[in-house]
Image (cartoon, rainbow, N blue to C red; front, side, top):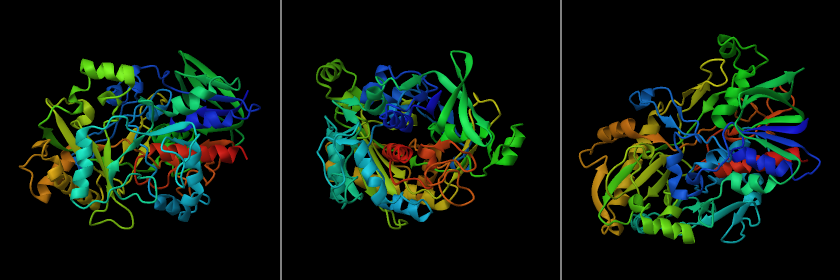
Length: 520
């Protein structure tokens, strides 16, 4: 018998396992459907895209998107210790302070920026040192890049040249501006939540971790979650929890498991022959994500990541953990307001010394770089539902991308701004021809068609078990599932609205706060 069972050893689950087992009297079982994080591509920063469609990836796909000319989009999600923090681009971004203040206005007491900042700081070991906004001594190492590509430096200069303010800390007093990203790395290696939070806790006798253990359903008795059923090494098993079951499977797997267990929209559950235990219409709804649009240029100098795997660079990395293999691929960035922006930037930019084309699956010959606007305040939202009652079947993912017209308009503005940055003098010594979309795409209509044909996810799905007080809320402000005792959801799915930037650091914060609530 365990006190807590955590389903999913991802960005949130590893944090919970670490924090809950700090109390030696508490016994915790952590179940992960994937395997251990032993693949070398996990730990070499620039190699992360090689993990897509591997055994470390759930490799989901959306439904055909009406707003994107019927395309199905590929959604990688981490399936290993560390979850998506083991396959992401390691960018450390918290979002905008107003994101959290907005959560509070939606009825989520204790989630304002002043409330969550201490938990961001608690998790962090900021290599630059402590400050009003940053902490030291936490399990997660946050660092500047050890080697910055010269084209990334040119991107920052180009942004300043066209009037963007320089910003050395997007997580400080001001989000807006242009600069280099900080990353979750330590000594040139990825610092996932598995590395930072889970590995130090593994030596504790009160923590049990099972990999290759896929949870197939919750055990519910008299309105309470008392355990889980799972399959490991071909064998079905049950584990029981004295205090709580915590779902940390992310925005896809957590609502899927709730529905498989009879918790969700009643009509949807009955359609698959699942007994309705709790009618919660919001489970799987409110799906939000960020879209990224690549604008790519040929590079006239052989300085990009296209040559990252040359022998000299490999030796440099193995000996010193420096050079292009230590790159997170998205080195430079910016937060900018479009003409449609309200109080906060609605565009984020990623810069990489590589062609961002089809998640890296389509190889473009030669050297190139990409300036990519990201829609960080999408108005479109979608849903997730079961494809069948089979717990091993992927769910139906319908994000409804660009169903709201302003989303497409902002992305078109982003493409035009990316071109302005790309044409700045700072890029003169590197810039060749515009490869994508190419000079033939001139009008807004042509650029909109380019977006519909090529835009991709930035891998940030959230919101499908949102916290709140309205009838579509799945969890309350302490992340307890409505209508079921002893059950919480702790991951990105509880976000009522998507944050203004990358979602990994906010997910870690959510888990830090949840652990504090449970440890009271």
